Amino acid sequence: MISLRLAPLAGITDWPFRLLCFEQGCDCAYTEMVSAMGYVYAPRQWATVTLLTRDPREPKLILQLFGKDPALMEKAAYTLSRTGTYEGIDINMGCPAHKVAASGEGSGLMRQPALAREIMERVVKASAVPVSVKMRLGWDAEHINVLEIAHMAEDCGVSEIAVHGRTKVQMYAGAADWFWIARVKESVHIPVIGNGDIFTAQDALEKLQASHVDGLMLARGALGNPWLFAQIRDALEGREPRTPSLRETVTVLMRHYDMLLGWKPEHIAVSEMRKHIAWYLHGVRGAAQIRNRVNTMKDPNEVKELLWSLVDEVESSGEPSVVAREEAAAHED
Ligand SMILES: Cc1cc2nc3c(=O)[nH]c(=O)nc-3n(C[C@H](O)[C@H](O)[C@H](O)COP(=O)(O)O)c2cc1C
Image (cartoon, rainbow, N blue to C red; front, side):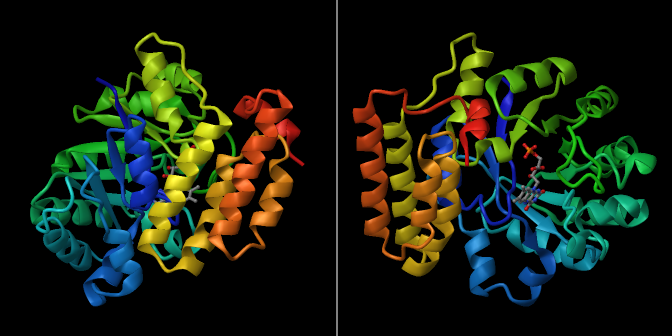
């Protein structure tokens, strides 16, 4: 069966959001990236503890570590893999953010194959759970070395790899190149998870057909849209993918809100939910005004009331409540 994964997304894939994706058929998720150095030196710092939190209802969670110091990566992997909390440890070789990559971490590791090898070897040896690596195609179009790093990972005992079909320099621009993902899949024996630009069930089918990967990893396509997992599973199994109604969307959004409110201080939950609300309402008529109002509100009950009033208004208008996501961008102001 094709594995459907929720990608690691810093600032987004905390346990409440992951849980909603699991409910829609995601079968494996990743934590947001965690600094090995941050963990080793300050394991009880609130920000780190937050990133490490797992809900017991999550069926399969992989912890993602980033760092460039082999000793710190090894130490973090040793300890965290023995907490019984995670099914795997993932090494981040894809983050393109300047402060991460320029200092040699994340995608910066792909420019230093000897260091990347040392980290993979030491983490695999130290970890009590399987180790995976998430990588890009390379630093830039002139330095595509994903095949070399993928072979190296296999050699080091890494159990599977995920490939985002862009270079570091591309950041998130241009189209993900699934040709390279297909070449990686052809040339290693460990499972390969493909990642990049899966926004619809149709995208998933096409990319799977082009690459024959073992799993698909969803990132931006799942924002405000945990239903994408169910839609892809439906398409894979020959059923017509289903679009949720606005009422269903807002019902899930409210659960998301309540989980966050039950976990974090109210002002933080309210602030963090703003971006999620914008994503959930993507494609809904009148959403732009609602978003602007939500962004100034501090009381979660006021936000909830406003969202339910939007549902009532849209339902009583008799118009279809949710337009197709691709069409949505055109309607947004
Ligand atoms: C806001 C944001 C945060 C991200 N955080 C991480 C991260 O913590 N670790 C990681 O490996 N990739 C991270 N990524 C990259 C995604 O996991 C994924 O590889 C990328 O978005 C491409 O997939 P997509 O085209 O489906 O969005 C992040 C991407 C975005 C947009």
